[in-house]
Length: 361
Image 1 (cartoon, one colour):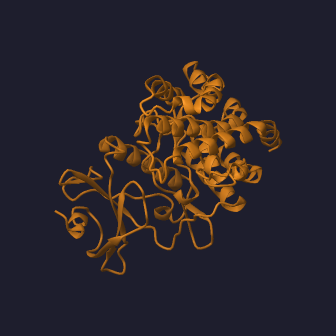
Image 2 (cartoon, helix red, strand yellow):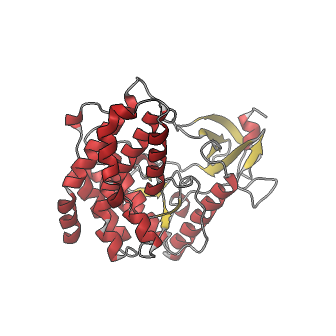
Image 3 (cartoon, one colour):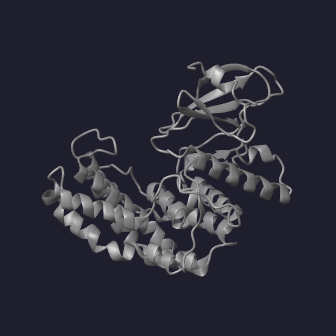
């Protein structure tokens, strides 16, 4: 069944399918817009789930169902209006009303209601960063009391101990014969290993809880209405249990760098305190209801953790022979390592300023 219209017809949608065409430029899943013939019926988004990235589709869709159901209940209890635009709605299949995806020739497909008159944004500035902080903090806050136990859709995704273990293994094996050329970088990164794995240790001691996090906190993973207000958080595939640092630190790693993560000119790289302050203001406004004093105190650590983690991951790939990330030239991954290591140093130098700002809010 290669006809997208036939695939769309497997779902219990309202209206009849008029047209199916590509939508967006997603890097992971194939995404299509399904328009309906009737004026009073919504349009839909049809997606093929990439099982190379998300092999357990039952877990993936189970997580998403639990999260969207819980957020919907919270919005209803709060008397929110326009709820269908404030949370994603996934459609069941015609064959099984309890199933939110259909298998077609070995490939999983799913369908959700298209949110009309809404846009995503690409620009990172203080205004959009503050909106992102508030939206992702509210997302975590609404899920702080979710009763279901969610699974890890990508195992050990933000586990710093695991990422360092990967790095040490590839250093020992040295498959691409590159270890000797980057020994000073290896020494610097491993020199910070103890302090950068503190979250895992505190978690084992029971002092740091795992919460439901988005784990892909980018500006373009929010929908805005025509009045520039955030409607909802989208792209829920990576929603899973993690330390809250995942959402806070991962956003700042990209948004608070003055340049792109692969810019080879290290004079461009640095940690942008204006973006940090804007995102943190928004985040603490909505997340203060559930954060523990220790979680709040460790937010500057989170801002340093993610450039460090990414430097470790880029170095692991460089030493592996550039197998994971696409590289446009031979030392592309090495430029990424140097960039993220420079960002890490910049963030580390600003930790006292970060802590003072957080204490002032």
